[in-house]
Amino acid sequence: MHKAAFFAQKEGGKVSCLLCPQKCIIEDQKRGVCRVRQNIGGELFTLNYGEITSYALDPIEKKPLYHFYPGHNIFSIGTFGCNLHCRFCQNWEIAHGDASTVKVTPGHLVSLAREAAEQHSIGLAYTYSEPWVWYEFVYDTAVSAREAGLKNVLVTNGFIEEEPLKKLLPYIDAMNIDVKAFTDDFYRKLCTGRLDPVLRTVGLAAGRCHLEVTTLLVTGRNDDPSEIAQLVDWLASVDKDIPLHFSRYFPNYRMQEPGPTPVKTMQRAYDIAREKLTYVYLGNIRDEKGAHTYCPQCGKRVIKRNIYLIQEVFIDDNNRCRFCGFQLNIVGKARVNAGW
Image (cartoon, rainbow, N blue to C red; front, side, top):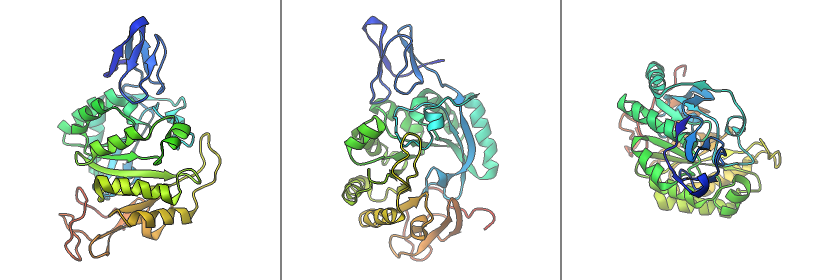
């Protein structure tokens, strides 16, 4: 166990968790919504410090991050627990199940990540489950990784309070934030959360680190063209150059209905978003148009992808289009994956 960073003591031995907008009031020996923060004797402890359920060397595009060191890999790790309860969770086995764990230290992880650099890995990604409920370990590891010259990436639901977010952000190089829908009703009924804190996280992260946004389109729940247009208008008001990924839904966890998102729905969302946003992508689907990066000025394809592998790159070392010289919103040098 490890003492939690953000909590306040209450009367009667209770504690108030101040990490995320759930704002759990936790009685002695009880846990919060996330399942990993427990009141022990009037103090809050985290139960997953250094506990890893999943780890792998992933393509950075799998996060998905298409504009952050394209074609590179990243050492990816996750724990158990989550502060949302999405009925359609794609990683429910570790988020809400009882997955086995391996114990590690921040220093050990940094050493592994440095060794992975030989395989074109740029650093560490805190992913698979929700990194906010792993906050103390993520913070300690991110500080050590930064000192070692490694990149830190968060793949997150964005459901976090402002103070802990601002404390961690200086050590984060890139984030992909899930905006699961653009209605509070969706968040409350299907995720046990709220929309506004997520939008606040996007606003605070924009300009402080590289940022991309993902929305999983769930058939009949958040795929209405008017809602997609509202999402797009809002993101464009933050920064029209933030890449937006629409991901295709497949039934999972406690939502076996409706069926997978129709391909036409995905393509319609892409077309709506391209009217206001510079970079739009489609995930969990084979779609020629939604897989690649195009120059906003001349319209030429400058990065060709086959799922997570990059086959062709037509931008220079400064991320300018080789056809017209336009400066693209890309961080780091892109590389073609070996074998192409």
